Length: 315
Ligand SMILES: NC(=O)c1ccc[n+]([C@@H]2O[C@H](COP(=O)([O-])OP(=O)(O)OC[C@H]3O[C@@H](n4cnc5c(N)ncnc54)[C@H](O)[C@@H]3O)[C@@H](O)[C@H]2O)c1
Image (cartoon, rainbow, N blue to C red; front, side, top):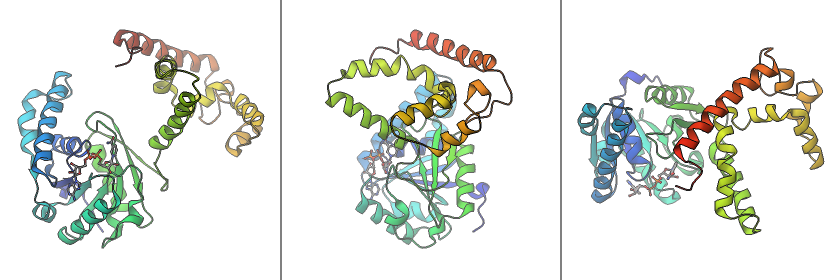
């Protein structure tokens, strides 16, 4: 299946709820003609109101020019007529409710009305859409997982099924780049993908702390905001291990009765992280002092910014 991004003019976003309205907006911002389809006219009316609100806020923060707003809104055609929209769509983003029967029903309609070349990108958060739905030409089905609010958060995870074609993955990647997003292609399917998997681990720790009465909700969030909130934007969650020291991580794991080959192999090779200029990341021979300075300068700038925003109080 040959796919050229320049041939894609019509995008259909199906499901105009929390995610769909804002995904449709992002496509329209990049010049695509978008049919935004939902079952109910009321959902579409709310969606268009939200899009106008979002665009005005983006203009207020100089992310777009306010002159562009009418043409962006004009490129979005709200509709309850799935069949008509499906017939002209070259690319479909599915953002209907996370319900197996609803998803199955929608894909059966898409399969019936769309051209066999039309790509289907599902925004499912955790369903294995590749096993759930039956369509002709399954090589055109891919997951394109956005984050709320889709018009602000840069990341979109791309997840392929066993049958998804490399052309569909490339097209989705190039499309998201064109939209100004940061796409990441997962190497294989895994439940909840990257971010939600990490979020699930955090949630499980939070529930444990709350259930055992270790700390109040306010204290847990204050703890996170006065630590993670500086650290995460600078060293993420993987590079942070290099700053702790992989030799230390290895000892901690041993104390827990664990051994992980990805850590042990590095330690065996004398790669402890920042202190040896090599760990899970490669610091190209830079000194520990140089790396620490670069990190700490960013921490200090973020701290100043967070204090200015008064971020340590609950929203
Ligand atoms: N809410 C989030 O933060 C989030 C984040 C990432 C991904 N997702 C995923 O995005 C998808 C949509 O989630 P949401 O939060 O926008 O849900 P939502 O309930 O806000 O919106 C779903 C919309 O789909 C419409 N719909 C249902 N059946 C339909 C049909 N047959 N035809 C057309 N429209 C139909 C509903 O009327 C509703 O407007 C889900 O798969 C969800 O898991 C959600």
